[in-house]
Image (cartoon, rainbow, N blue to C red; front, side, top):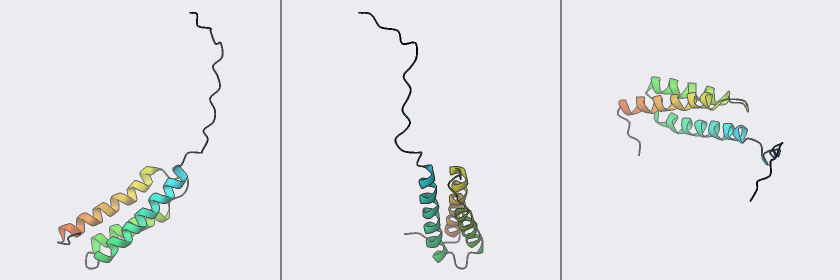
Length: 94
């Protein structure tokens, strides 16, 4: 059996849907805000935790459709630091 030579490769079809990162950015930012609101309820009396939560809020509100996941991750990192601060202060999450 002989294989025919194809001098030009077939063009690839464009993706059916655009990259979902724009949508994902806003979903992730919404999750950051929701988690920040939840942590904020527990953070009264923990000024360092409140500062991290406020920074996370600010970063989440600055998210645009062109934001990178690293930028959104920075907001999430601040929430992790806030939670660590609360746990060091003796607050226990259920």
